Every structure is written in structure tokens, then in C-alpha cells.
Image (cartoon, rainbow, N blue to C red; front, side):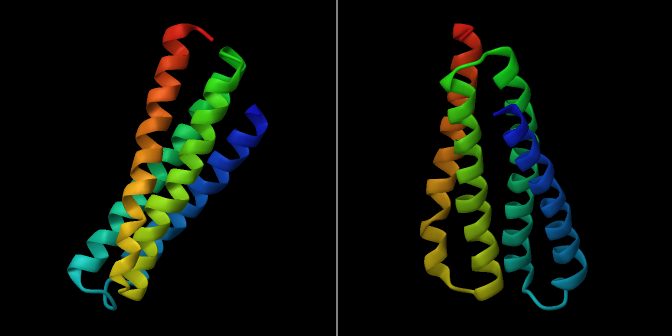
Amino acid sequence: MDRVFFFLGAVLAGMGVAAGAFGAHGLRERLTPELLGVFEVGVRYHLIHALALLAVAWATTRWPGPGPIAAGWLFLAGILLFSGSLYGLSLSGVRALAAVTPVGGVAFIVGWLVLGWTVWQGQ
């Protein structure tokens, strides 16, 4: 699983940089400042959690077991749901997508708690 999470982290980090560049250069003139800010929050959390996947890859080698693996999948779900919904909201203006964002946020929080608990327990 370490290779899977490292691969996902690396690919998602690259995609996060590309999304940030797209927002800074391609959307600045097309979106309102409010929607551009929404897009930038999505990029920020996307990049943070892509790096978290790299940490999960390492953690799976240090503390083998279900904890780091669960944290990795939760971080991936968070990127897709949290950042994805913010990208969709900012690009489409469909406010209903904001209902998905908290689900992704909860996935991030639970992922960090699971990872921390795993390390604390040494499992």
C-alpha cells in the first residue's frame, strides 16, 4: 500500500499545482473574487492532503495495519469530495455542490484522527 499512496500523493500533488496555476492564470479574469477564493481553498486543501498521502505511504511501512490505510483512503475521499465540490462550485456556480463540501471535510478530520490514533497506539 505504500507505493499506492505514494503514487496517489505524487500524482495529486502535481494535479494540485496545475489546478493552482489554472486558478491563478486562467480563472482570475473569469471568476468573481468570491468564487476565485473558493477555488483557491479547494487547491490549498488538495495540496495539503496530497502531501498527507505521502506521509501515509511512509506510515504504512512504519505502522503496518489498517490505520494508515484507512487514513489514506479518507484523505483521498476528502480531496475528491471537499476540493472537488469547491472546484465544481467555483467553475459552475452551482451552489448545491456546497452541500458535499462538509462530507469531504469530515473525511479529512477523521483521516487525521485515525492516523494520529494509529501512531499513538503503535499499530
